[in-house]
Amino acid sequence: MDSRSWRADALLLLTAVIWGAAFVAQRKGMDSVGPLTFNGIRFLLGALVLVPLARSRQRAAAETAATGGKAPETDLGAYLKPCGVAGVALFTGATMQQVGLVYTTAGKAGFITGLYVVLVPLLARFLGTKTSLGSWLGAGLAAAGLYLLSVNEDFSIAPGDTLVLIGAFFWANHVILVGRYAQRLEPVTFSIGQFAVCGMFSLTGALSQETITATGLRGALLPIAYGGLISVGIGYTLQVVAQKDSPPTHAAILLSLEAVFAAWTGRLLLGELMSWRATGGAAMMLAGCLLAQLWPAPTSPAPTSAAGSSPARAP
Image 1 (cartoon, rainbow, N blue to C red):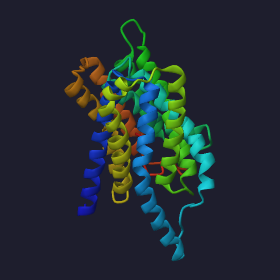
Image 2 (tube, rainbow, N blue to C red):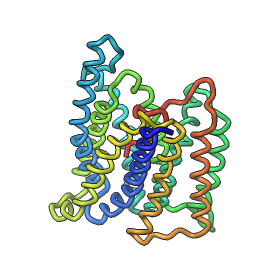
Image 3 (cartoon, one colour):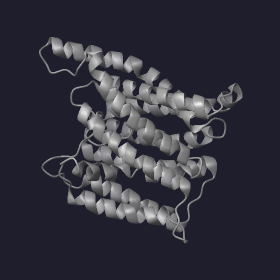
Image 4 (tube, rainbow, N blue to C red):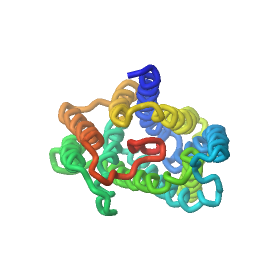
C-alpha cells in the first residue's frame, strides 16, 4: 500500500473517531437544550462550515467541464428537490436518534445506528436491487446482537433504543436517496442543501415544541460546536478527501469503527459501562455490519453515498 493509501486510511480512522465521539457531544447537549434545538443549530452550523469546500469543488468542476470532462450539475435549481427530499429523511433520522439519546447511552446508540449499513441493501432489495448473501447473513447476525445489546431479561427494549433503531431505518433510507441523487450532483453542495433543510425543520419544530433560552444555549455551546464544526464540517471533509485514495474495503472497515469509538468515548467521558452480554451483542452487530459491507457484491450493486463507495451516514 502506497503512502497516499496510508494517509487516506489514517484520515478515515480519524473520521470514525470524530463521529464516534459525536454521540457523547449529542448526549451532553441534551443537558442544556432540547433535541430539536441541538440538531437545528448544529446542522445549520455544519452547512455553513462546508461552504468554502463547496466553492472549491465547484471551481474544480467548472475547470473539468471547460476541458471537455464530465462535471456534476452546477445549476442550483437542480438541487432543490433532491436536497428537500434527502433533508426530510435526514431530519427524521437525526430527530429519532437525538431524542433516543436522552434515554440511552452513547455507546448503545452508536452500535444501533450502525445497523443502517445492514439495512441499506435490505431496503434496496424492495426497489429491485439485488442483495448479496452477505447482507442477509449480516442482518441476521446484527439482529441477534441487537437482542443481546438492547432486549432486557423481561423481553422489553428500552424506549431510547427503540427510537434510535427507528432512526437507523431513516438513516438507511437517507443513504439510498443520496445514492440516487449523487450521480449528477456535486456532493458537498448537495450536503449543504440537505443539512440546511434538516436544520430549518429542526429549528421550526424547536420553536413550537421546546423552550430556547440564552442560558441553555451557553450550556450547550461546546457540544453544539463539536457537532456542527467538528463532526459535520471537519468529519465530512475528511471523508470526502480520504475516500479518493482509500480502497472501498478499507473505508468500510474503518468507518464501521465509529460505533466502537462511540462506546469507548462514552465510557471515558461519561462513565458509561456495558455488561458482558451487551458487549457481546455489540461485537455481533459490528461483525454483521462488516459482513454486509465486505461480502462480494451481486451484479447490481446497492446504492452508495455521494462521498465514496461505501455508505456513510451524515454525521
